Image 1: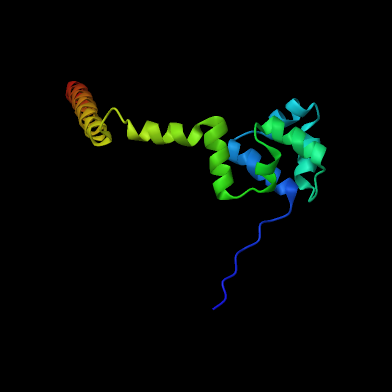
Image 2: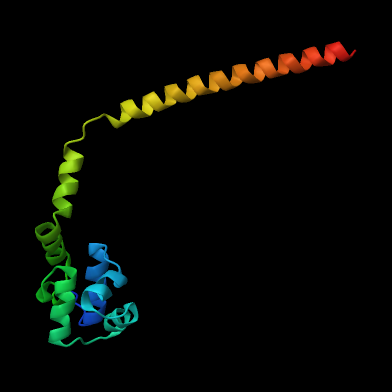
Length: 139
């Protein structure tokens, strides 16, 4: 049985857009760094081919190297984000060093809701008693 691998897309504009979105950067921010309009960035992202000079400028604006954009794949993207932005490492450490038990917080919230419900219920009972008294006085 023959094994085929999917060849990566050659659409460089789309790869620029994917990298930008993975990094959470808006077109406006890239445009500002490049000194162009947001519409110009949009046009770059629509082009299948991007010249090397523009690719280098866009890569610098995104804080990555041009090769990472050209060879965009999952491994390169993760490596680039971790190396340049520390995002994945920060998330892993944040989850690993959890300082509270989420189930305890959930149980506390349920208890607080019960207390609030009891206060609300008592307030309604007093209101009903007052209304009943007013009705009795009118008779």
